[in-house]
Length: 391
Image (cartoon, rainbow, N blue to C red):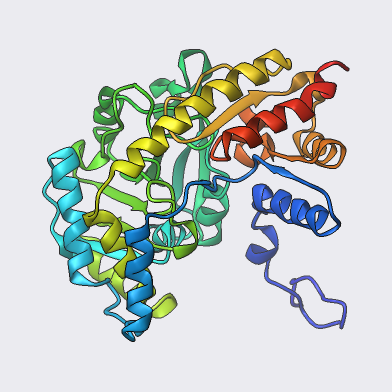
């Protein structure tokens, strides 16, 4: 007998892996907030990492020119060579690392790049060690492609530093990879170079999510894992640094032995990234970077306002973020179910935030607040939250 669930018409429904993939709760909150807005409510959006800064005009012009010139066709699956050369040049300029452009695959955002990494790395039952807390989508991405996510704790008392004893205790015969995210979503921590060296020496492949590189506040800037080992996949993109979220443009730097395999996966599932988005990304990489500097300075001001305001309202903040644009805040004074707390906050105050349940067991009683929103909206959100703090 077919053990798949049955749909309302009596036919077999989705397979188990499709039913079991967890929802991305931040996007669920965003959908609920949109429904309130359609009903006439004003909502302060602190739930998603959507930069409020506009895309640079030279980037917009590059995309527009591509469309006007008919540059909206298939490209080679690995991405336009000038773009891959510009990405490689960035690694040399920022980190002093030489990267062969042929090791780079351009993707439709960073998420498809993860699909390529896990598709090339994982056999059924292979394990990937992921930090707890972690970006919400990591476990579902890994499990959907047959892997088994295994969480290891971070040391909140030391700014969510790596607990290498706990990490080593979870290494086993099926450990295929360790996942790194620095600067981190949701904690805002930046792994030190010493930590990167230790990770690179553990043995498994390292998959390094570097999407928030360049969004740092006064601390030692994040370093690429490419400088700390040979068994490394690096994933990055244009969404955060250049605010190009809707352009859906990312990339992956692959070990040479994995390039052909990943290219074939990309051919079968994605074909190629959109040509106008690739040309816009080329403009972003080659153009002036002063807006990135101004944006990070603005985020720093917003970070301080949000951290101070949340503490004043009774939220527990173990670590003030030094990168990315999120604050992970303990909300025990509001209850124990972060999903229910977020639902109540949204409907009572019109402030959208993300439940900590999205980010692993250690964050289950926390809420994540994004300070990618404008300063005046952050201040308005804090004002609306004040009645909750007085209960």
